[in-house]
Length: 299
Image 1: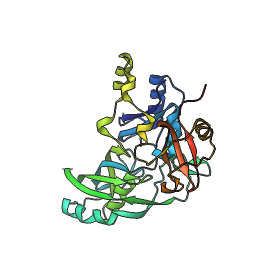
Image 2: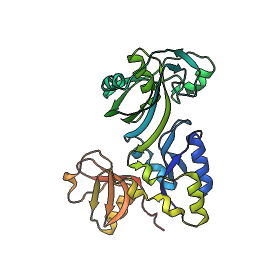
Image 3: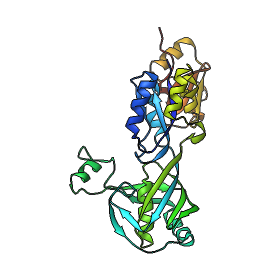
Image 4: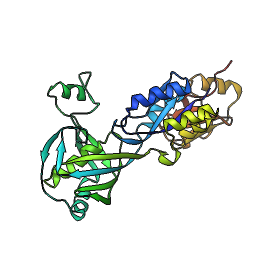
């Protein structure tokens, strides 16, 4: 049975849930989940976990994201992207120099007000559903970080491509809208491509059609990143134990072994026992325990 992470290249017009449904059919697996939604109108990298890899969600979802987005000035929309209804217009012309001068103001740690049309929940209901019903709700303000926001090129009159590197939970369409607002010009996001999600990038991604072709050839395994490899961004804990100690460890008990004092406390680590990958462990400074077991179940 194939288990691991599939780096899917999502096309525009397809929801993240649609991708999960297709992956279930292609791999004939029920346990499938994505590591964070990508707006239906956006394209790009969407890591999908299959099998026991669905347990890795918490270790993959918080990673940094990278995008190429297009800002169109002169029109604002209610959804802050090109799929919404216009709600503000201006004949003002924004030059590349003006945009480059504005971008540094939106770089680094900052507060961002989530858009009304978002998947965030209020009292158990999605904000975008409430917005469609005309229900007014208090918009959530969240802490985000944008380590990089840089000018790429001009694509047309009042249209510019920018590169965005940001933290989990950043709404790029809101960023585009707010950049326009800081310049006194209505703006919206007219294009978005996610080029990287954590360690997963475009070079290692597969379209749904490519996955179907691999399935026909009996080569689906080529698209699956093993669980151990998907966790290479975190540290490791290597332990040498006797059979009794290894059995205790694999059943969730805390064990003591040499080198514990060198491990970071309360930090997820790839766990190895006698050379075998077992999953994710944490140390409290005195003992180690497996918090997410990914090894082979005993017969």
